[in-house]
Length: 222
Ligand code: ZN
Image (cartoon, rainbow, N blue to C red; front, side, top):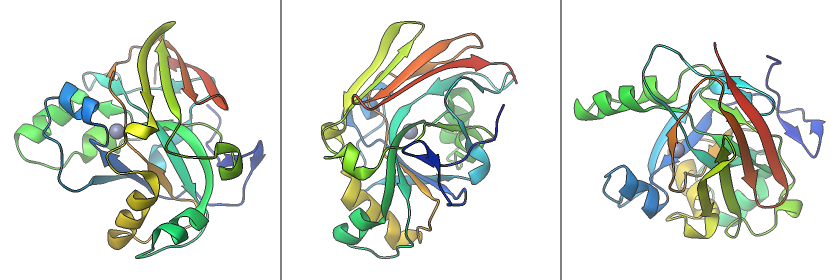
């Protein structure tokens, strides 16, 4: 598989591959489907740069670690360093808007959660963040009115709208930057709407963000 690079408006951009900061339970309907309580403040976790792979064409999943779930999420590429930033600085730091899969080893995660242990093995493994090419924020427009859709084997599984986020993108970036300095090349995953489910080798996926990103891809063996 070809190596992942950040692509904005069809061009490889000069930004390193950084960390991926993710928010859990950012859509009430998804929190409910996994029987999780609604958080009182954003639940954050990080995937390392080694989790990034291209979403287009094909990506692989671990074969011996139980169920691997798809979670389609709007992703935001960071182009400027920000720390303790306000919402305007958060807006200025956005270099692109795309769609990613927060791949999750659900059985591994369940076991870790039951023991009160961190989720890294379930969320941060190699290849755990297939990511699309990005569009500019000008093309993306209002980030809180974007349809996210995922079809698996031609069947619609996820159909949500970023209007339903509990923590909208700009306050979320501002909040994240209180804990983690965001660097050029970092990515923010903004949470998944309801409808997540398991992947199997051979599944074909179409993952869409509004009418400007449409990734056609396939799950292959590792
Ligand atoms: Zn997620």
